[in-house]
Amino acid sequence: MQRRLIPLAVLLCAALAAAADLRKSGAEFMSPSTQAMQRDDTQNPGMLWVSGGEALWQRKAGRSDKSCASCHGDARTSMRGVAARYPAFDTHAKTAIDLGQRINQCRVGAQQAEPLRAESEELLGLESYVALQSRGMPLAQSPDPRLKPALERGQRLFTQRIGQLNLSCAQCHDDHWGKRLGGSTIPQAHAGAYPIYRLEWQGMGSLQRRLRNCMSGVRAEVPQFNAQELVDLEVYLAARDKGMTMEAPGVRP
Amino acid sequence: MTAIDRTRRRVLAGLGALALLRPAAATPEAMAAAIKAFTGGAVPRTGKVALDVSLLVDNGNTVPITIRVDSPMTAGDHVAAIAVFNERNPETGVAVFTLGPRAGKAEVSTRIRMATSQKLVAVARMSDGSFWQHSAEVVVTLAACIEGEP
Amino acid sequence: MARALIHMPPTARRGEAFEIRALIGHPMETGYRVGPDGKVLERDIIRRFTCRYNGEVVFAAELHQAIAANPYIAFYTLATDSGTLAFTWEGDHGFAQTETMPITVAG
Image (cartoon, each protein chain N blue to C red):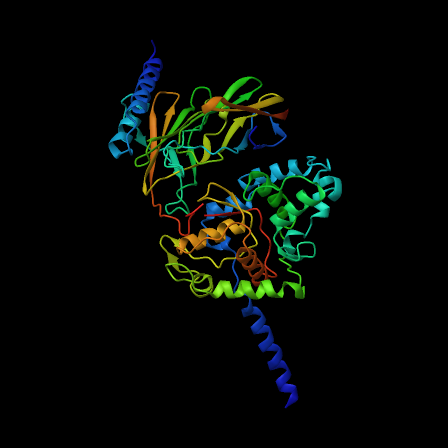
């Protein structure tokens, strides 16, 4: 009796494992030419921001007269895998923070310089450059228990109906992905491509900018940049995406 | 004055006239007039030119296009210029590329804006003075979840 | 100085056509958009792109408002002699920028 059950259990586990990951990158929902734009560094407009970030990495700033390189050396080594772990709980800030906020923490704290404005060319440049150093690696949010409150808040926000259209993120992106919304196909809302060059913006933007677009899209009140709701959502999205491959800098429609 | 000089003058005059008029939106008639100004009145033949663009684009703000022209690109037989037109943007002219035998290969790619679903036309002027064209009807839909309040 | 990226091979065989991809950061403001204050945003576009190979123009583009922001142009040129390719973008409000790339031609 036991001898027959074991192979069956093994088969079931294998079948479940194979069927388990239905997660698809937003890139799978794009046309071949947009996919080519992201895949090919010589065509990817995001690389303009990466090259700006690479230059900024070397530039001394603030009262400290230090550059990122002064403390962190070669980003290709020191920043490898870093973006894949963000948002992370930050002891200094006593809360979860995203990559852009972490960069500004260095700007203000270590460099003693002015923080970079949200969605500015400089901040997006540094974010893109740092995120590039995690490209191809799996999203790896830390199991840090201090992230739990933000994670729970983020999950609640993801499933909460908002706006005049009274829609939640989950309704479109968990329940109806793959279906059409106007002329576009609804993607699953994954975070590993950010920052992205969005064709609609004709420019680079952060995940926070994209989330604000979604909220504007359902005619809800749009929180300010760096509002806690946005970071909470980012924390939840990173958990939801754990194990998926980082694609930044991404290109999206 | 050579035939090419006369064509050049007509092209400049044509483009100048269009710039002054500043139509609210181009129209198929305005596009036809712009093509005529580029060719000096000649009707471009269909062939040799391939305008490569998605028939249904991801986003009208950034549409990749590639124009390829079948030509040996020698001193005696080459593509001199490629012009791209649209029929429903505020301006009918998109770009004019100047090639020549030093181009080696008549293939140009760029990214354009399309305000709405419309026809795009690529016209090539060959070194022998002939004109060839290819057109594509592209469907453009509005993006979902766009910027609202800043 | 706008960020610009040029991709092309460092070497080529004499007589072969090689591809050049030029990308520059620029808003290509059409002059048709209305700003948050209700006023039309002034046109600010790159109008001309030129590629000079050892000083001689081998490719040029006249650009209009329908060219998307952060203009990308990919084109070919014939490898003749070793030397320098110079890429110039010119546009509204006196915008002018040149980037150069070396080319080594063998054969």
